Image (cartoon, rainbow, N blue to C red):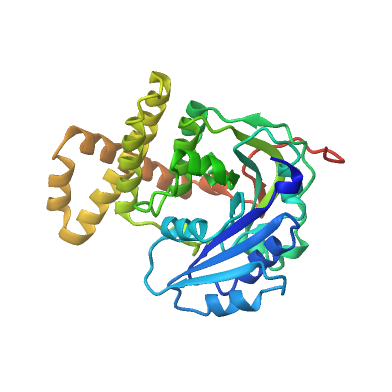
Length: 340
């Protein structure tokens, strides 16, 4: 790996993203290391494909694929991987953007298979023109993710701002993916990044993270990543069980996976209970809750936490604890006047 071979394919899976995709494409085409930008329009009902074509800068690097049937982000990304050739892959969500110089910083070293940087989380009402948003300079403070730490860092906690490491958007070595037969799990429409990263690290991927900020994520209520079905939680919990089948995992890694699986499975049980209650009434929901001790425990805890959240809101405490500032970062960094 060297700067001369650091050709990146940026993959943008998009659905109904006509409003935001021009800025995403422009931020990718601006980077000299980007050899390809592949937009996959996943059966949009708006002008996403047309607007994406219009964002072409004339360098021949942009291509647009359109599906007539919605297949989900994993299928879309895998299709783009199969149809591209660059040795490195970088995922960009259709409503997000890269900061200038991102890939130059990530390719400053060659000791990784996955390399991710900090993410600036930008509230939608603060992002009318993403081209004017500037990331503060943070010291890189490089570190490598270990399996247990990565899995545990993906267990969210109530009344704490979310910062799971599954949100990272690394540059990925195609050679590593091909060597281990890895692709996105097409059964997943939630947590597909988490599952790929976990499986890669389980197979020995050197996953490097720097605190320098190169990725901007727009936080909006209507983003696709902010919506998921109850069944999506079940599929993600089942993915943890599949990871547990990797024979080479040490017991500490399996224990971390079990914690994550239980966390996600409990979320599913609570959501399922609420769905049954809404669709078939309280009696049917009670029957579901009492069908097993695991169901009952997860539901009681979940309902109790929801009630506690309601109390915080009435007391005016939730606003203080859950306030989302216009700008924040996925990982805390040390500001510096200049970056190395």
